[in-house]
Length: 298
Image 1 (cartoon, one colour):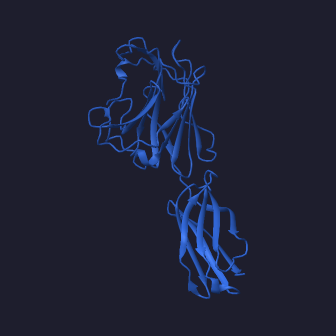
Image 2 (image 1 turned 90 degrees about the vertical axis):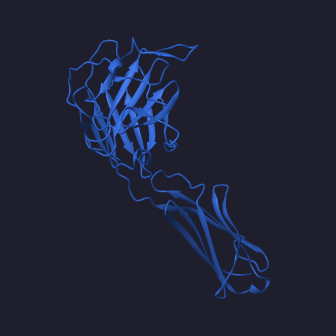
Image 3 (image 1 turned 180 degrees about the vertical axis):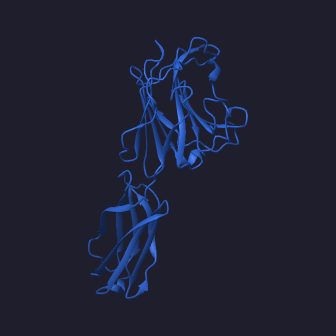
């Protein structure tokens, strides 16, 4: 499978009203890149491209085109990305020199292509593109699918006027017109991916029963959230430890259920009046969060 468009078919204006670059200081690692406007009458007109990323490495590209908030059947959106910051590798086309990857939105689908020495293509040997998705004119992809790059040099293309034969699926680009940002001859925009230290936080914790009872099951439950998105964890490795009178107590159940980590122990009938001490831990993406407890068995 190959990229559906050819740059030779794309007619864009060469005049540049504004020198492209990041506008203002990034906020929460968000950068807004300005494109020139009014290059060609009737063509889609990219005003800005807004790029951001979160601590999980998800990079978001949002193209702003007045009057074009959604992807219609006559449109194609593409990003060319130099992921290794090396113009000597990847495509040597003057407009995307160094391009290693291309993202394409067309026909209601999104695809990630890689430069194969001749063109941008995708074959069965390529890794999954599970993180790639889009909504309207916004694309989401994990930097891990772009070679774990920390600096993305990119351009963005929007085409309209594409005609698709409903019987054969053939595409006609002869009347397509588009806008390239930055403008032809201005290279790439440059964005630095900044991934902070992911932390896990305890949101809630409970023991059931609230006071451990001899001969009964004691269950500890904990919900945790991640620092970058605030989302509750729905999975991960659950570790359960507990002791009574200094002797380790084997867990009977552990895992996630209903969005909470759970540990269960059978309290010995002979443990009445003794102290039970335990810890429930969740390990997720190399990070861990724990909650410990101590109580007297009733």
